[in-house]
Image (cartoon, rainbow, N blue to C red; front, side, top):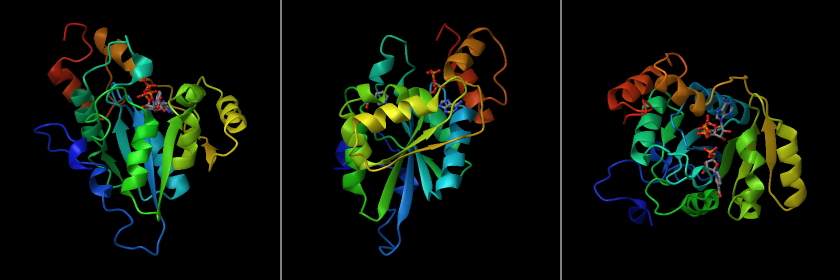
Length: 232
Ligand SMILES: Nc1ncnc2c1ncn2[C@@H]1O[C@H](COP(=O)(O)OP(=O)(O)OP(=O)(O)O)[C@@H](O)[C@H]1O
Ligand SMILES: O=C(O)c1ccc[n+]([C@@H]2O[C@H](COP(=O)([O-])O)[C@@H](O)[C@H]2O)c1
């Protein structure tokens, strides 16, 4: 299964990088793996801080960042190529031993559905690995429109994080009411960082600084590849 998820000539992690073997060596212990899904166009410190705070609060053993290959809800918005977004995520997580990046969704053809990813992860990991899908309040607001949204909550625990400008409880209540059978859905208040990829793309286009809003290697990558200038 793992090899078939990979594109040709690609050498990146197959499922969840350094977490691929989670749960296999110590079968008596429960492991907790966070999945931080996103378009990451580009990844920014809002994503990193939120994943880190969820990791800390929920005692996660690791968080895998999962860039979406073809984020269907952002169709027509000119999303940057998956390889470039994956590279930036890889650079952003490199200095945190609890983080890694996965190629799973960018190596899968067609539109990206979270349920497909969670099915692969659930089949890959033994039962002593619990999955925690992390989502911001804005993304989860639309969760009832996601492919097989009822199944998502059965495959993983959902952790919804606060985001400036979005009301968290509305989304949570709607999902809980609609899918009464879900395993678990929690919400957590994270440090309010009013930062978005949209804002970052705008800033680069206008020639303004994004320093300290993204990790420095990501800023350098954006500059080196001429991303978001409107001419690349
Ligand atoms: N500043 C933030 N605080 C909390 N959660 C965030 C923040 N930015 C993004 N997220 C969450 O991270 C996940 C991935 O977000 P995404 O890659 O779409 O970034 P974005 O900043 O929302 O991008 P865009 O502006 O292009 O829509 C989503 O679940 C989103 O809700
Ligand atoms: O499964 C779906 O139908 C679905 C629809 C929209 C978004 N998602 C996932 O939600 C996460 C955040 O998405 P986004 O568009 O805010 O970057 C990311 O992992 C997406 O793949 C998933």
